[in-house]
Amino acid sequence: MTETTCRACGAPIRFIKTKAGKTAPVNAEPVHFIPDPEGGDLFITPDGDAVRGWKIATESNAAYDGYTSHFATCTNPDYFRKPRKGDRRRAAT
Image 1 (cartoon, rainbow, N blue to C red):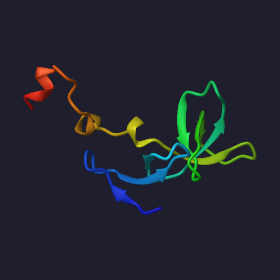
Image 2 (image 1 turned 180 degrees about the vertical axis):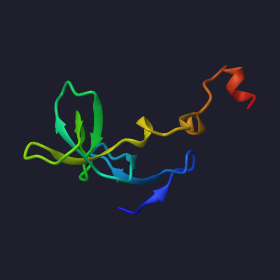
Image 3 (image 1 turned 45 degrees about the vertical axis):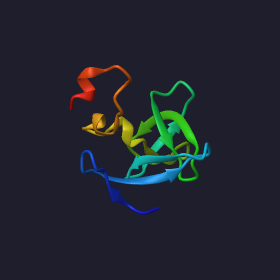
Image 4 (image 1 turned 90 degrees about the horizontal axis):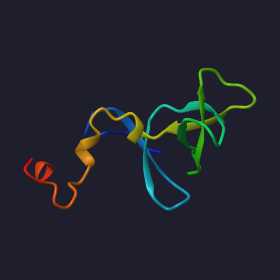
Protein backbone atom coordinates (compact mmCIF):
# COMPACT_ATOMS: atom_id res chain seq x y z
CA MET A 1 0.00 0.00 0.00
CA THR A 2 1.71 3.14 -1.22
CA GLU A 3 1.25 6.41 0.63
CA THR A 4 0.34 9.47 -1.41
CA THR A 5 -1.21 12.91 -0.81
CA CYS A 6 -4.85 13.97 -1.12
CA ARG A 7 -5.20 16.44 -4.00
CA ALA A 8 -7.92 18.36 -2.14
CA CYS A 9 -6.43 18.85 1.32
CA GLY A 10 -2.82 17.66 1.16
CA ALA A 11 -3.21 15.02 3.88
CA PRO A 12 -1.30 11.73 3.61
CA ILE A 13 -3.60 8.96 2.32
CA ARG A 14 -3.50 5.42 0.98
CA PHE A 15 -5.82 3.47 -1.31
CA ILE A 16 -7.31 0.10 -0.41
CA LYS A 17 -9.18 -2.19 -2.82
CA THR A 18 -12.51 -3.04 -1.18
CA LYS A 19 -14.30 -6.41 -1.32
CA ALA A 20 -16.81 -4.68 -3.64
CA GLY A 21 -13.96 -4.10 -6.12
CA LYS A 22 -13.73 -0.34 -5.61
CA THR A 23 -10.72 1.66 -4.54
CA ALA A 24 -11.24 3.53 -1.26
CA PRO A 25 -9.08 6.45 -0.08
CA VAL A 26 -8.19 6.06 3.59
CA ASN A 27 -6.14 8.08 6.04
CA ALA A 28 -2.55 6.85 6.02
CA GLU A 29 -2.34 6.11 9.76
CA PRO A 30 -3.97 2.88 10.91
CA VAL A 31 -6.32 3.03 13.90
CA HIS A 32 -7.58 0.54 16.49
CA PHE A 33 -11.29 -0.11 16.56
CA ILE A 34 -13.86 -2.43 18.08
CA PRO A 35 -16.40 -3.79 15.58
CA ASP A 36 -20.03 -2.99 16.33
CA PRO A 37 -22.85 -3.01 13.74
CA GLU A 38 -24.32 0.01 15.57
CA GLY A 39 -20.93 1.78 15.57
CA GLY A 40 -20.66 5.41 14.64
CA ASP A 41 -17.63 5.11 12.35
CA LEU A 42 -16.81 3.15 9.22
CA PHE A 43 -13.41 1.50 8.98
CA ILE A 44 -11.70 -0.23 6.08
CA THR A 45 -9.60 -3.25 7.02
CA PRO A 46 -6.31 -3.96 5.21
CA ASP A 47 -8.06 -6.77 3.27
CA GLY A 48 -10.83 -4.45 2.07
CA ASP A 49 -13.73 -5.17 4.41
CA ALA A 50 -15.88 -2.18 5.41
CA VAL A 51 -16.68 -2.54 9.11
CA ARG A 52 -18.76 -0.33 11.42
CA GLY A 53 -17.38 0.17 14.89
CA TRP A 54 -15.89 2.46 17.49
CA LYS A 55 -12.38 3.89 17.44
CA ILE A 56 -10.35 3.25 20.58
CA ALA A 57 -7.14 4.91 21.74
CA THR A 58 -5.12 1.85 22.69
CA GLU A 59 -4.79 -1.68 21.39
CA SER A 60 -6.69 -4.40 23.23
CA ASN A 61 -7.48 -8.06 22.63
CA ALA A 62 -10.89 -7.08 21.23
CA ALA A 63 -9.48 -4.43 18.88
CA TYR A 64 -8.86 -4.69 15.17
CA ASP A 65 -6.58 -2.57 13.03
CA GLY A 66 -8.08 -0.64 10.16
CA TYR A 67 -8.15 2.70 8.43
CA THR A 68 -10.57 5.61 8.58
CA SER A 69 -12.16 6.52 5.27
CA HIS A 70 -10.63 9.78 4.06
CA PHE A 71 -14.09 10.91 2.92
CA ALA A 72 -14.96 11.31 6.62
CA THR A 73 -11.97 13.55 7.43
CA CYS A 74 -11.06 15.47 4.26
CA THR A 75 -11.14 19.23 4.89
CA ASN A 76 -12.11 19.98 1.28
CA PRO A 77 -14.53 17.21 0.18
CA ASP A 78 -16.30 19.43 -2.39
CA TYR A 79 -13.17 19.27 -4.56
CA PHE A 80 -14.20 15.79 -5.77
CA ARG A 81 -17.97 16.25 -5.95
CA LYS A 82 -19.51 16.49 -9.38
CA PRO A 83 -22.24 19.09 -9.95
CA ARG A 84 -25.76 17.69 -10.00
CA LYS A 85 -27.76 18.08 -13.17
CA GLY A 86 -29.46 21.47 -13.19
CA ASP A 87 -27.44 22.87 -10.30
CA ARG A 88 -26.43 26.27 -11.72
CA ARG A 89 -24.46 27.33 -8.65
CA ARG A 90 -22.05 24.43 -8.94
CA ALA A 91 -21.82 24.55 -12.75
CA ALA A 92 -20.68 28.20 -12.72
CA THR A 93 -17.57 27.49 -10.63
